[in-house]
Amino acid sequence: MNKAISDKVIGRLGQYRRLLGRLAEEGARFVFSHDLASMARVTAAQVRRDLMVLGASGNPAKGYSVSGLLEDIEAFLDAPDGQNVALVGVGNLGRALLAFFAGRSTKLRIVAAFDANPEKTGRVIHGCRCYGMDALEAEIQREAVTVGVIAVPADAAQEIAEHLIETGIRGLLNFAPVRLSVPANVYVEDIDMTVSMERVAYMARQNAVSLEKL
Amino acid sequence: MNKAISDKVIGRLGQYRRLLGRLAEEGARFVFSHDLASMARVTAAQVRRDLMVLGASGNPAKGYSVSGLLEDIEAFLDAPDGQNVALVGVGNLGRALLAFFAGRSTKLRIVAAFDANPEKTGRVIHGCRCYGMDALEAEIQREAVTVGVIAVPADAAQEIAEHLIETGIRGLLNFAPVRLSVPANVYVEDIDMTVSMERVAYMARQNAVSLEKL
DNA sequence: GTAACGCTGTGAATTATTTCACGGAACATA
DNA sequence: TATGTTCCGTGAAATAATTCACAGCGTTAC
Image (cartoon, rainbow over all chains, first blue to last red):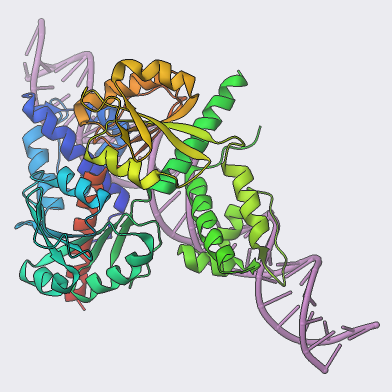
């Protein structure tokens, strides 16, 4: 068995992919680890270590092939046929997410949205059709959805997570400010904007204070 | 000088605060570290270690005082008079953020929003007034804003970050999928939904695969 | 009054993550 | 072909984060 790769590495590989895409557009054929590193704000050693998991290898004189790396990262991160995503909660945030992800990637597609409010049912928002909560299981199975995005109020999130897990979903992106309780074989990534905002505020204050000390 | 506290600890303290608030509403007077731990999905030792930074202390028989801890965390995390926040970018995401944070906290207030599109200027969205980009500096200084939220397209983010930093802001919450280049005394927290989504998709796939191996 | 319990606070150990540092290889130049 | 340069790949070291584990204490029960 291959020794589990940490989520930090996965995240940085995603970063590198984006940067490489930009480089490719600019016509770059090769890139050095320290170039990628400075773009991603990490060290060159970190980049090289991250790329080790791909088995990709570079050339001491020219660096890494931009297109080669892109292919390697894609082969590593993406499912060959892509993965379908379902969004639950079509409020302000849900709609913003639909807009944000609409057409962004062919490998990750938000194929269905669900909302408890029946007024939303049947509408098509940023190319994505809305369903009532009662259609959740059937639609998720029909589309073979593997990832769920939770954009509902905090008090509804746990119930919806359980519902999604019942349908077989094993990955959740959770925007609700609660800690979900899920079985060990389900991966949850929390995007907790409240906590993030508080942290930035705290750190901003520290920086301001430490300046005064100079 | 007090040994810098890691951002992970700050984040968890924010979590604990939210959980304690909920406990207080339910009428709980005392809480054990393992209760808080199971709610926050961390270990009890982790909770106790995090609380050490507050200097707060619990009682071996009753645990920690809920209201006492709340006060201690507040004293630690919040600025006594609160902090003002400015949002740049009033697109789908920006509006969702305004809705999300509207009235949520008296300590962190989004007091102004800015957008390059002149149609937005003058509008009041979820209680927050929109200004043109030319008003940025004056308004930020008038309101003594200390935190900036960047919700603009990737290619505009760096320029706006620089502009915000020029006005004196030392903390940024960045939703644009780019790595900002900022001086060392500015704290940036990235919320990179693309990377998060890709990571969840990858992890979901791993979980699905590891199941097959059983 | 005192014994028993179960928790806190924390030094030490462990684990995870990042960085250092250097041998070896590919290319450029002459 | 030889030589120099620069970077890659990676074991080893360093650092950061988490968990273990236990002494000591407040409470409760008797």
